[in-house]
Amino acid sequence: MVDTRSAVPSPPAERSTPRVLEVAAALAWRLLVVAAALYVIGVVVGYLAALVVPVAIALLLAALLAPAVDRLIRYRVPRGLAIVVVVVGGLAGLGGLLTFVVLTFLNGLPALQTQLADSINTITGWLTDGPLHLSGDQLRGLRDNLLAAMSANQTSLTAGALTTAATIGQTLAQMVLVLFTLILLLHDGAGIWRFLLGAAPAARRARVDVAGRRGLAALVSYVRATAAVAVADAVGIGVGLAILGVPLAVPLTALVFLGAFIPIIGAVIAGGVAVLVALVAKGFIPALIVLGIIVAVMQLESHVLQPLLLGRAVKLHPLAVVLVIAAGLLSAGIAGALLAVPLLAVVNSAVRSLLSEADAHVNPTDVHTSQPEASAPDEPGIDVHSEIDE
View: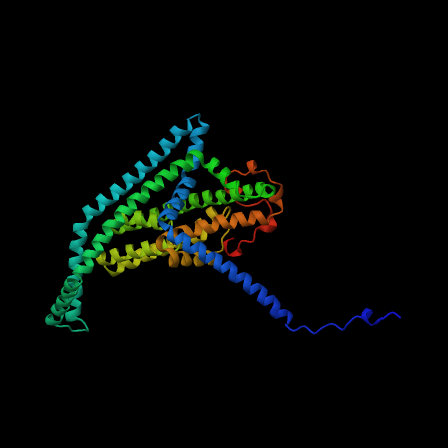
C-alpha cells in the first residue's frame, strides 16, 4: 500500500520576519559596507594627502593647458617644444603676476598702516568719548593685557614659526611634484589613460573609455569656465576698488581672482577681505559701497556667468555644489574645497555616461575632451539639471 501522506503539500509556514524588515536589513548592511569602503578610501587619501593633492592640482592644470598644447601641435610644433612653451609661459605669467602683486602690496603697505593708525585713533576716541566712556587707564590696561598674552605665548609663537618654515619646505617639494606630474600628463596623458584602462574588463573597456573621456571633458570645461568667471569677478570688483581709491586694489583683485576657483566660499572670503580693507582705509560708507559691488558681481556670476559658461557642460545643482564644498572643507580644508567641485563634475559626467543607452554605441575616439558638448551624452532624457539655472 502506498503512503500518500507525503504528497500532500504542507501549509506554508508563517514568515517569522516581516518583509519590510528583511529589505531594510539588506539595504542597511549594504550601506554599511559602502560606508566602510568610503571610510577606508578617505583614510588612505588623507594619509597620502601630500601626494594626492599635488597630483590633483596637476590634473587641473593639465586640463587648463592641454588645449593650448594641442593647438600648437596642430600648427606642426613638436609636442616636447609645445609643452615647454606652454609650461614655461604659464609659469612666467604666474610668476610675473605674483611678483607684481607682492611689490604692489609692499609699496601700498605703509599708506595702509598710516590709515590703520588713524582708524585706531578714531576707534579709541569713540571708546573714550562715545557711549562706552572708557577711561585712558582702561584702554592702557587692555593694551597691557594684550602684550602680556603675547609674551606668555612666545614659546607657542616660536614653535609656530618653525612649523611654518617646515611647511614652506614641504610646499616647495609639492610644487616640484606638481610640475613633474603636469609635464608627464601633457606629454603622455593618453598613454597613462590606456594603462589605467587595462584594469577594466575587456567587455566593458570601450564603455569605461567613453565615460572617462566624458569626465575629462567635464574637467576641461569646468576649469575653462571657472577661469573665465574668475577673470570677470576680478575685473568687476577690481574696477570698483580702483574707482573708490581703496588701497591695495591690485592685490585684492588678485585675491578675488584666486578665490573664485573655490566656488561660493572663495568669493565670500575674498570679498570680506576687500570690505574690511575698505572699512579700515576709507570708512563705513565706502565699505558699504564695496559690499554692494561685490554682491552685484556675485549676482551676475550666479545668474548669468555660471549658467552660461557651466550650464552646457557641467550640470550640477547649486545645493550639490554647496554640500560638496562643505564636505571638502571639513574633510581636507582649503584643498578639499578647491578639488571637491571638479571631482563632483567628473564623477557626475562619468556616471551619466555609464547610465546612458546612447553612449553604449559611441566610439571612444569620437569623444573630444576639448569640447564642452563632449562632457554629456547626446541623450535629452538623461539631462536632469535644475530649472533654476534656466
